[in-house]
Length: 262
Image 1 (cartoon, helix red, strand yellow):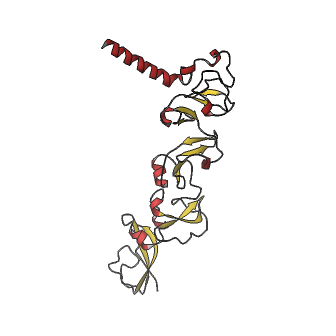
Image 2 (tube, rainbow, N blue to C red):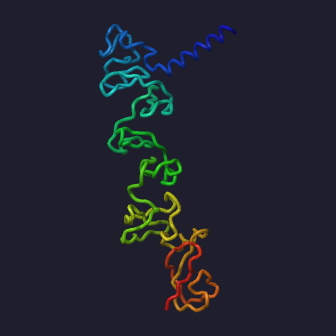
Image 3 (tube, rainbow, N blue to C red):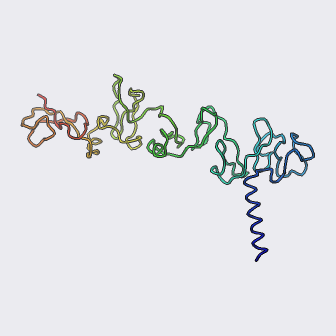
């Protein structure tokens, strides 16, 4: 039993050393390999070159190492997934090795779930999403739906919410859509309400059914023709009778429901 416990202890110690020591665990100091550090690889390195040896790609380096931009095998550490690697690194699961995030000029060059960091020029893991609301719940600014990736900042296509300060008119949207706003102006594009970053303002709902679907906080307002009664022009419609009503706009709860005309 004592021998068994001793063996288990040794195994745990070796595993711990593997995680901490990177590829030097197998090869020792690169300078101790017959003085060939910086060469194209020493003899007996069937598993790949140790730190300090030249390389043309990660595959030429030992597990736990990567080929640096200067063409030298460098320790990165062992991993089973991205969470095992430090900032700026991700896991090459085929080699169980932490390697630097790829360089990029735009997020399109990064894998889904990662975005290009302009400060470092590297792809950085963010999160997966389907809508802007998904991304915002996870602490990001918007969702690149085409890549299913959470992004920082503001959606370049515009947002469902936002104050309008320009005189541009909104586009005519289909049922279930609202006009997008960017920098205080309408972009001319509509988006489905279901994928908005949050519930749009009542005033941005262009259709009666969309307004009525928000009965808890929005009220459909109608133009009335040939209206009579003491409550016309107030939220109370019980005392207002009109020959014809037409949906005019969606407003916040408590607004006049019928705007009487001639």
